[in-house]
Length: 347
Ligand code: KG4
Ligand code: ZN
Image (cartoon, rainbow, N blue to C red; front, side, top):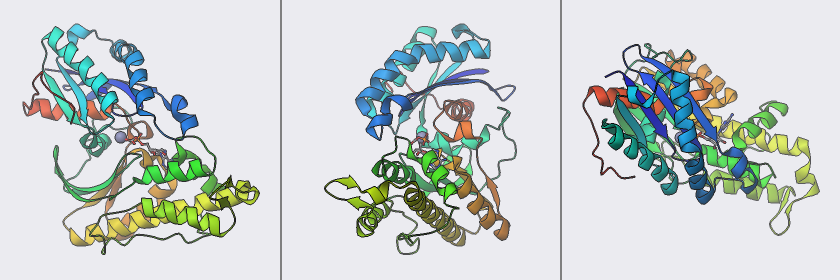
C-alpha cells in the first residue's frame, strides 16, 4: 500500500490530501476555506458550512488527485475525519469517503480530528515526514473548537491531561473580535491589533490558575470579564453596543493586546504546571489554528528555551484545519491495520 487519500470536512474547511506512505511525502494538500461565507455572522453557521462542503467536496478531491499526479484508481486507502466537529459537515465528508471506498473496493479508516491536530507537526514544511518528533512530549492544542493538553507517547498514543471547561482559546479571540465589530475569524485580527499596541498588558484581564483547575482551562470567564471591563471603562454599552470611545482604533488595539498577553500568560502557566507534574515530558508541541500566532509562539519559545525543553509547531498551512494531518494519521493506522467498516458513523 502506498497512496492514501484523506478527506477533512469537520468545520468550515473542505480539504483533501494525497500521501505517499513509501516516500513519506504529502503529494498534495488542497483546501477550500468557507471563511468568507461565515465572516459576517462572526462565527461558523453549521447549515451554511454543510451546504458548502456538499458543493465543493468533489472539486477539492479531484484537485488533490490532479495535483498529486494520480487518479482514483491509484488510491490504496481512504482516511476521513469522523469526529469531533459539526454533524452536517462531518456527514458530507464521511458519506463521500464511504462511497469512494465502496466503489473502489479500498479500505476506509475513520480519523479523530483532534488526533490529526496532535500529529500535524509530523508533516514538515517541505511536506516530507518530519523525522525529528520526539516522545514523550506535551502537546498544547488550541483552535476555535477546542483547547487541550495531551501527554503524547507514540504515534496514535496520547492521553488528555487538561482541557477547557467551556470556550476554546480561538473562540475567545473570535468572540472578542466580534464584540469590537470585526469579522470571523478574529484570531489573526487580534494578533495584528495587539502588535500595533506593542503586545503590552493594558487592562490586566483575569488569568485562570492551572493548580486550582487541575490543568483544566476556562476562556468563557475571560471573555465575560473583558466584556464587563469594557462596560466599566465606557467602551461598550450593554444596550447599544460599542461606544464612540470603544470604536477608537487605539482603544481596540489595547484591548486586543491585553487579551493576547492574557492568553499567552495562561498558556505559559499551564505548560509550566503540566511539565512540573510530568517531568518525563521532553518538550512541547503547539498545534491548532491558534499556533499561527507568532506572539504566543515567542512566549512559549522563551519559556522552553529557559527550561531546556524543545518546542515544535507545524508550518502555518498545517496549523489550521487541513487534510494533510488526517492523511498522516491514516498512514500509521493503516500500518497497524486499524480499518473501519463501511457502517462507520460520525462520533
Ligand atoms: O484549527 P482551526 O482552523 O479550526 C478549528 O478546529 O477550530 O482554528 C481556527 C481558530 C480560530 O478561532 C482563529 O481565530 C484561530 O484559530 N486563529 C488564530 C490565529 N489564526 C487563526 N488565533 C490567534 N492568532 C492567530 N494568528
Ligand atoms: Zn481543527
